[in-house]
Amino acid sequence: MNTNLVYLSLGSNMGDRLGYLKQAKEFLAETPLIKVIGKSSLYETDPIGYTEQECFLNGVLEIETELKPNVLLNITQDIEHCLGRKRIIHWGPRTVDIDILLYNNESISKPELIIPHPEMHRRRFVLVPLMELNPNLMIPHLGKIKELLDNCPDQGKVSPVLKPFQW
Image (cartoon, rainbow, N blue to C red; front, side, top):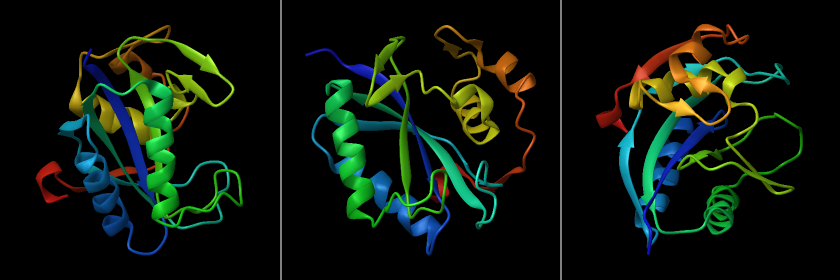
């Protein structure tokens, strides 16, 4: 089988934010055919969209997987559900959120999954940890990560909280 390089964004702003992110990372690492090969620092970030909520902890994982994108999506959604994620308010509070940012250099456009993630270039809380992991990354159809970060319309807080080895 082919091994695919994937970047996942993880975020939490309810309850034990760090605990939820650690659990999500562990669930992913324990999943057959998924190997976590890199992780960014964790950053405290301002909410976007619905701003009447607590700040988030956000980070990015780099994984290798033999799973197809739709199977990986089902697994990430199962992990979110297992950790108490409820989809009540769009961009609202959540125990954990796991988004597939990139899957190799592929472009996927299905009702349930769009890759590259359609909002990633507008979100500093995604671009900062992604650039930490791979400063030379090229985002399909969007360009170099550094240029995307330099031109990002989101100027919200993205403050480092924990180094990669701390979570």
